[in-house]
Image 1 (cartoon, rainbow, N blue to C red):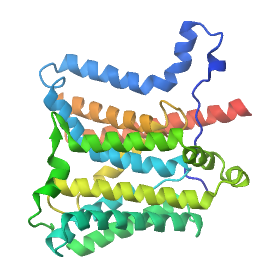
Image 2: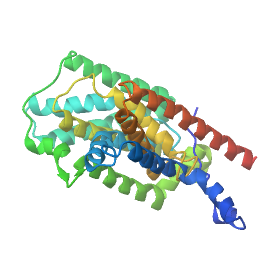
Image 3: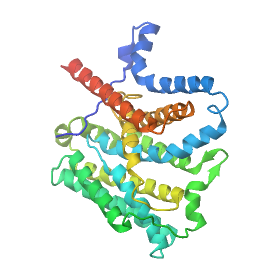
Image 4: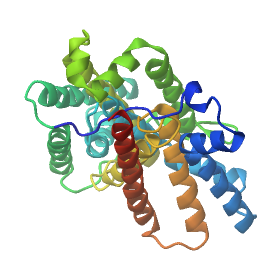
Length: 340
């Protein structure tokens, strides 16, 4: 059973040819509707909250708070390209941020060695997911849920429900604290990772191979694409990105605790699913994923500044996820009906 299928539905030049200006706008609206909605929300909240929302401080706060979610959304996006899903993006970050701190404070590793080991551990978890999905033929949702739950249990066992803390070097803390002007360094990580993934997915053959696997793995295999190798590799890449997000989280919190991390799972998945509804509707993509995270960040920030309660964020994320999956399902049915 495939966890997610994807195909782009953006209109081609032939589709737009002969249409009036209004007709072209209507055809392009599903492609750029989410970015336009994000812009509309920014304008709305700026008018309602002129003293707090359209400020450099608020922009910095949004970038600093949502950068880890953006990295996790990009990590979740990668398996979705191949028609799979990886839930360890939420569970894994719990283990990886604890490991990053423990290696330094309890086992005497340098911060550089600790970061390398954490990324390698993330790659190992991704490899296990890939093998479970492709070799053991376990559905990716179930496999990653099982792996993620095990990682979470290990984090609980190791910490005993207590915080892991100690003296961390300033160089490690700078991983999160450093900034360029009002732009925090985590936001720069997102930009660099997004640029790299955009090149890989949109300009290199590997991107086309992954989308072909997501659309029809049997047809992809018949065309000479090594489905098993690419799927396992994409899980490894997702695991490495999740581990990197764990390192950034450890630098931000300066303590390790198992109660932190699972709150990132839902918004990360929402961002990735929303990414399949824009730019290239019906297909997860890098720019769409960033738009998905941005609209979540803008919406939650604005609502909270208007006096929203503490439960607004999970409520907003849950509603948005349902809407995103609904839109994705509609575009999928539309694609099937058009080809049928």
